[in-house]
Length: 261
Image 1 (cartoon, one colour):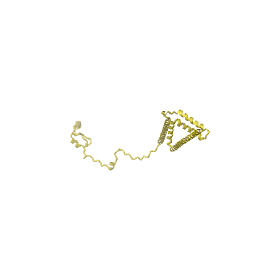
Image 2 (cartoon, one colour; image 1 turned 30 degrees about the horizontal axis):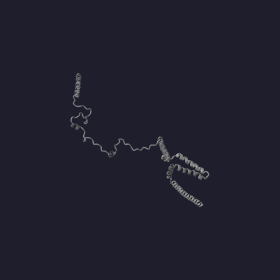
Image 3 (cartoon, one colour; image 1 turned 90 degrees about the horizontal axis):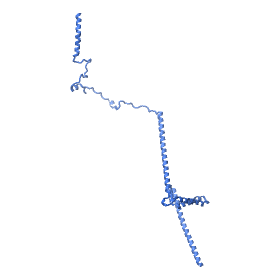
Image 4 (cartoon, one colour; image 1 turned 180 degrees about the horizontal axis):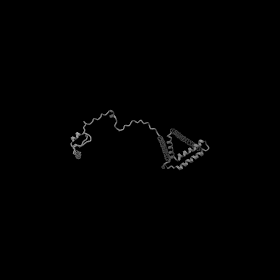
């Protein structure tokens, strides 16, 4: 019994020393599991060893073949959206109000533009009419080189018209209205020939715009000219007859005086 206890006391330190020495001086690494062929315990020194360790195309697994459906699918987007099947959006009261306001604004803008154009065109016509009137009045006045003055000539024309109304005061309406006009026009052509010529040209310019009035004016003018010509001819004939009668009377008196002597 004593020997057994002594052996156990001496064997325990010896066993511990053997275990520590085996662990310290072991040349290989102890793994909990079996070593894997893919794990590299250390980096190889030569490229040949690295090529032997790296996988090649022969050792890699073959890629799965592509299906026709997968080949034809578009790859532009990672997420494919389904076709839109949403119902049309209904207009809200706000949208309806906005559309009505837009229509009203466009309506007002259109009519305001139309009104502005009408006002501008009216003002342009008024300005053109004013310019035409002023230029026409200035063109009616005689030139300074002619020496014709409007003020005394206008007074003479007015006096001639008043004289015609006095002369025809006891006649019919036609004579009472025509006599002052005829005497005034005659006086105007007498004392204001340049002004009356300008007035006649202006009247003829406006008459040409109405062919019927222009033709009537030409006919009246021809009739007046013809009447004046016939009046002159008859006046000359009457003058000749008077001169012949006076000569005959004078010759008769001279013959009678000669016979009396």
